[in-house]
Image (tube, rainbow, N blue to C red):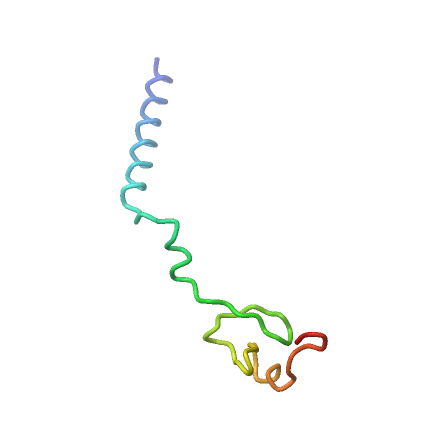
Length: 78
């Protein structure tokens, strides 16, 4: 009988903890994750993706650094 009582109290405490965590965390909506993400662009020289506000642009192409901007697109690209 003592084991049953112990398991009962463990289950009650676990359920209370789960309910408390569920009520105290802010609700997440499926669209929220993408709403705060920065638009990404691909470097025309090396292919690395980076946030558009950190990239350099020239003639509708994006670059990750000044050196890649000066070197231009990778051969075989545009």
